[in-house]
Image (cartoon, rainbow, N blue to C red; front, side):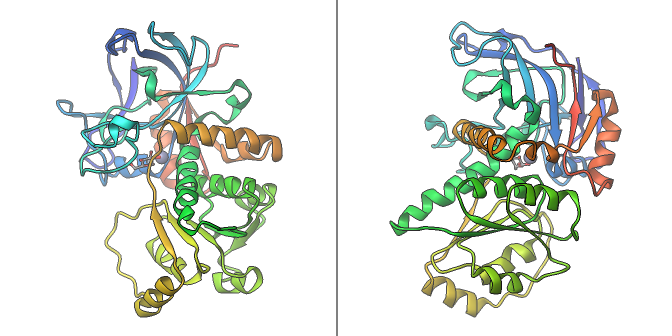
Length: 369
Ligand code: BGC
Ligand code: ZN
């Protein structure tokens, strides 16, 4: 079957390849789920892997099949599988157990060692192919009423995990009633975080560079949040209007913004970092001032990556509530379809070059009604 792969370590090596079709029996103990891939989303991680900044092939292979945001349909299940049936829409989690102490409790999303395994990213093949098989433990059902949001389940799980972690950690305060959140960045993770925070009842300001009207502003406003172009208003100016935010969610991929956000957080607040910067940039930071304010203000910083089965479920529940609350808004994120695995070059071109491509995804196969 066809697959889109890279040669890790070699820049711009994205290519089409042929791999063997997986079988249900590849997964032991009757726990296999064989899935036909319908759509796969791609993001900056895939771009960085193709730039050879990131990613490793499975041991023994010299290629890595890309793709970690999958939407598919169950073809067949092993005899021990009960939570999905043939015909169901599903997605699949990304990170897999290595040798971490967290693995035995189903927390392979939690990092406790340097080597980690992520499908389509590190040491495991991804989903940009025609079929895949995996253990039922990692297969998450997507309700039929959300099939139009397909590949958003995985990015949503990352936003859901990060916010859930922040709320869990804030139990340290015993009483915490967050009112205002700033979301830095209006890519898919920032927009989905905007949704989750709005559904929690917060007043949300979402910051991006572009000047409204534009699609990002339309989506943010569709979720009854406030869009701020940083070309028009500084963070400090917004703080004058809104007060200091209790939550700042950073999804910019810009470390000067990640650190700069520290100056604006409210007392007892939480700053969540979800994006990464692979470079070597240095920035000046008012270190003494921040040290003083953060200690005296009981402030907290959380880094959050990946997501497990439960976070996928949380994210999917919020996609459903979001769809009921703001009908038709979430799907506007899904901007750029690419037809078929053969069009891998177009997929990468959109990811690299098109500033309007909020979300690129590949239509791998047609859905059968
Ligand atoms: C993926 C996560 C993954 C992270 C780091 C992101 O693009 O969505 O699942 O853990 O990259 O590899
Ligand atoms: Zn991703």
